[in-house]
Length: 289
Image 1 (cartoon, one colour):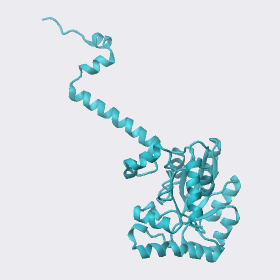
Image 2 (image 1 turned 90 degrees about the vertical axis):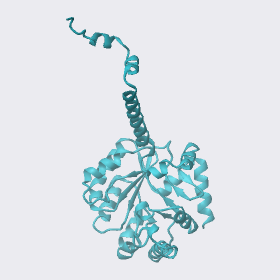
Image 3 (image 1 turned 180 degrees about the vertical axis):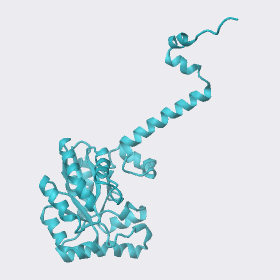
Image 4 (image 1 turned 60 degrees about the vertical axis):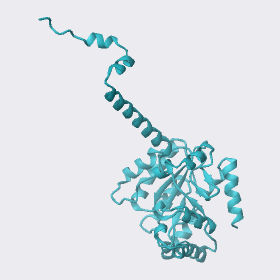
């Protein structure tokens, strides 16, 4: 009997394209599906990170992105992203002021000569007015993060208004000024909530890059790695006024500096938007004064 012929040289001589065509249809389908999955995952990772799938699959949102209107949405007064042509990021810290971490964070910001926006909670402002005043005195910005850090989508309209207003009342009693920027606790919101926030005169501030430091098990290295992984022009960094974040902050700032990024407050980033979204933001803010 004639021994079976070794087909390896023959297969090697066949082009990859032809070898693919020789595969069974089911196997070709699986390969194509795998390639598409990897490609879509790459697109999502590069372009859509920092937002949920429900937003990514929203055709209206994608329409606004194609027109460059996703940076600041006038209809919602929602600030989602900084200028994509500028090497700058906005540092934001939620949930404070906390005596366990605020002074350390402020010291580090002074050391690196940068400023940040602190989305502070009303009850914490009331408990630590000295920390609030020091934060402002050192050139940083304060924004509204509700009075008790309750999820706004779990509240009635009346409760929601009180949760937002009480934080502003506390801030006014301490500083004589009002708050104009707001981030919903847990970024839990819906169109009704966004409409209410807008009607109360606030710009809702989202984020593009989450550090994951709300998880008490996160180490400083994990926090820094998550924060730095997705940095791009115009990123809004979501950090928290927590001790582990304070430990991670020097590495974050050093890496940003090494990459050429400038750190700004949210209001500065709004001022640096391209003409169309910047004018929309100014128009909204002027209409509420």
